[in-house]
Amino acid sequence: MLAPGSTIGILGGGQLGRMMAMAAMQLGYRCIAYAPPGDNVAADACADFFENGWGDRAALTAFATKCDVVTWEFENVPLSTVAAIPQTLLACPARALEVAQDRLGEKRFIAELGGTSAPFARVESEDDFARAFDAVGTPGILKTARDGYDGKGQWRIPSAHEAHGLRFPGRTCIYEGLVEFETEFSVILVRSASGEVRFWDSTANHHEGGMLAQSVLPAGALIEEQVPAARELAAKTAAALGYVGVLTLEFFATKDGPVFNEMAPRVHNSGHWTIEGAATSQFENHIRAITGLPLGATATRFASIDMRNIVGADALTAHTILAEPGEPHLHLYGKREAREGRKMGHVTRVGPALK
Image (cartoon, rainbow, N blue to C red):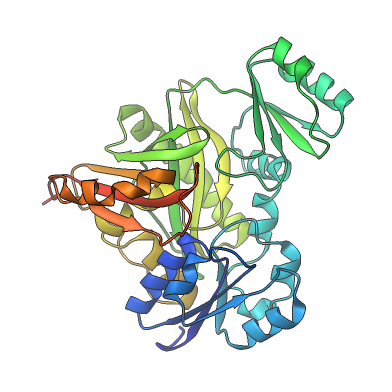
């Protein structure tokens, strides 16, 4: 166990790192973070911040020498950056990032564990795309194999006409057939270094433009029926990766059972409700896991929960949100520029407390 006062290093400077650092402070830990120059809101909650390029070996060495353990707040930290950190400091093996950063590898990894995903094909050229389109059919989605998130690097293809009119983006992609589903949900777990696993309740997730807009509980009968199978796959995934900390798997709820969509080896937007709504938040339990503290209870505390993202100019409505009845819990991330499609915060509304 890391003693109070030890230093946790966070790779990444966004809102997830910010909320992780806030949870760490409650437990007596000190956080520092590392990220390239930008609007790094995690700096507000950290004792020190290294604003350097991912490839700056000297800066990474200086950062690592100040850390007692190192974690990350998003899955696109370059593997070369993680390799520059002494492996004894990493809270979790870098294999988790390696799998999550490659959509093709991720699908194959899940298939080896017995999971079901959408039909897919590798695309590296115009000819590959034509063959993939013929094999998988339409409707479908062409995605870059790497570096996509929140709907970025994706092109929805509703028909053959649109497929033939699309210019290949010139980088390795994956073409996926669209899954017919009723709703979407996520399984969020925390795993300790000793292999103990705890799950939070799964929310029904609603997306707009490829970005999560809302997560709600209760999630509905269909999701509740499919959660056990999805949890089994998530637990297998965590064990296969030797994972430590919070891990998220996203699923489609279909008439034939849960279909895997993607994995996030980190705390997750659909788990933000746990700050007010669960006995222990995803952020606190991540810190507990990586420092060797006992994991906290994950029970839901309220009969109903509604978490909504605040995106772009909607951040200007804080006064209105806080004036609403029902004591909304507002979290703004301190970002300077409220541009379109940018997550500026979230608000959680809870129903009656469970007895």
